[in-house]
Amino acid sequence: MPGDANIYALLARQPQKSILKDLKDIRKLQADDKHLQRLQASEHNSVTLNDNGLIIRETARGPRCYLPQILLKPLVSENTSCTATDKLPEQQQSQETEDGATGPLDPIMTRSKTKNKNKKTADNSDRQEETHQFSPSYAAATTNPDAVYERFTRRCEQHVRQIGEELTRAVNESIQRLEKLHLGEISQQRNEQAGGNATSTPNNNAPCARDDSMASQATQSRPPPPVINPVQQPFVHYPPVQPNRPYGLQPTKLAIPTFSGAEYEKPVKFLRDFMDYYNAVGLTEYHFYHVVKQALQGQAAEWWEHVNERITSIPDFQRRFKERFWSRMIQARKREKLETGYYYADKNQSRSEYVIAIYNQIKALDTPPSEIDMIEKFSRHFDTQTQNAIVSQRIHRVDELIGTVIYNNSIISKQHARAARESTADARLYGSVHESREQLTCNIRTCDNILKFV
Image 1 (cartoon, rainbow, N blue to C red):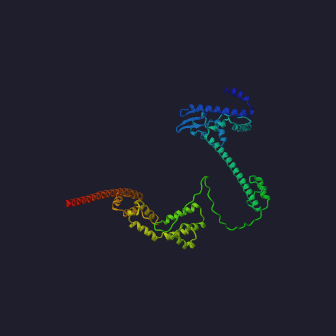
Image 2 (cartoon, one colour):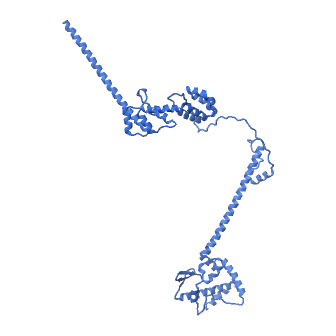
């Protein structure tokens, strides 16, 4: 060809080792150009060449992509699968032959006597070209997505394997370091026990736990210490530890709750208050029995003197106390008071105080009734006016009942005060009339006496 002289002149300047390879690439490019011209001249096919150097061919099934022949050999050498290297169908290749020739188009190659020598030289140059960053094989591999994916996968696997090895190495080093520290602490404890005084100052000759090498050497060279049997000491009751209080706060004296067993007292409330006092002061079980003597009075003190020798614990005391002062019979009496009781105004107790006192006792029962039942039974304790007010308002809670009772109590108090004022006024009027009558009678008698003398 006319341009071969210039090409050969340029190739003459390059090293002789790569001349054959460059010549081979040039021949392949020429063959690709001829092949592209033949495809473009065909009536049944539409062929174009894109910017990346790929041959785009329009077929009945759609566009297909083909690589030039110069890029086929490097991709095959890299063991990559690419659909773009598929050969044309046999029927289409038979139509694309030139001058009656049959078979696929091959690049134009020149034969020489040094066939094997040229082949070895070409193979060596192919290897060098694959390692070069700007070689045709590298450009083809970058345009092939399968090759890029495989190369990316290999790099990821290598990176993950490297990270795993580093983590394993770091974990093993940490385990060894912890084992050395543990051995150093064990050896130090053994030295302190062998000295006979666990609270004494640590031995200066003992290995430091932070020095890993010295601790390991000391544990290997030192013989095991002798076993010392611990001396058993008698059990001593220590006083309770006082809690730490903020600066400026001083403990206050708490009054001991008392219980005498009277009818108006509440045994369940006494137990709750006494246990709160026990926990707040921080008493021991030994002091508990001494404090109970001061808390119980009257018939409750007599009961304690009778059963104190048989009580062995605080829960036992609570159980026996409830059996005596909060038995089923006592609870039945409290329930009967709710059902049949009546409020008397002459006892210097308001209606609200009366309801609250009975409600607290009923609430402490083992099986207390519902609030609606208690409201219904409470309404029977008052006069007709209060009962009508409770029923008309449809009260469902004891708190609402207490509010209603307080309101009615104020109204009734006002009515009583007005009645008292009216009665006082009537009494004063009656007194004045009586005095006037007596004065008139006296005057009449005086007049009669005067008439007699006249």
